[in-house]
Amino acid sequence: MVAFPIIRRLKRPSAATVAILAGTAVACALLFVPIDLIEGVVSRSGLPALFPAAEPPLGSTARMALAITLGSGIGAVAWFALTLLWGDAAATPAPVQAAGVPVLRRADAHPDAPPRPPLLATRDLGDPFADTVVPILARVSKPEPAPEPILIEQPLPRDLDAPLAAFDPTAIPAAPATPSEPVAPLFRPRPIPCEPGERIEAFELRPPVRPVAADAPAPIAAPRTDASIHALLERLERGVAARTTRETDTRPTTIDDALAELRRMATR
Image (spheres, rainbow, N blue to C red):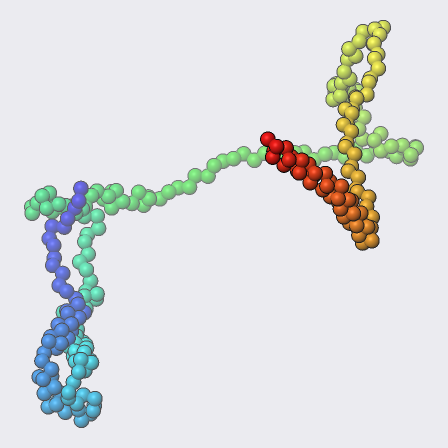
């Protein structure tokens, strides 16, 4: 349920808001005034004699400065005047509503039956703690004090080396104390799995046989050559001589065979 007040008061704008609007309106109006009219007013006012920069012709910068100055002045005057006329709204105390009075809707309000505050026990029935309260003290019986022990003097023993426990009546009881029950040991030996007189067969443990590793290939022997320059030259000479001998031996045979083949072909 949304509750609304019965009478709504219209709030008037604050003096600061009206002053800002008035200053803005004056500044905007001055921006649309012809520049010739502004120059004439400035010249007749004698302002160029005090400020040489205000001497006509005036540009857009002078127009903006004049608009801001007049707008600020008009706004300050309007704010001061409205503050004196209306008073300070913050200093005016707001109407205090009765505590506990409910806010009714417009449809539920009745002019002959104004809203009433709800029933309050502390206000309508009085203070429940106004009567005199008699303190009740609980009666607690104190325990009786224990009787003081009676000291009985005993004569000195003949043997001064006797233990002091012999003079304590509670040191040696009249009846011996009951022996404590034996506690089961934490470690219990395991029962032997063999019967008495039974013989255990023994066997020989064989060591594990390791697999025979395959024979590694023999490393390749490096060629044994005499790498001196003289040995290389001798090998080269022997090779050239052997090659020349083979060519000399095979050349005549080859020529003879070729000539014989040509003769056979010619006779055919």
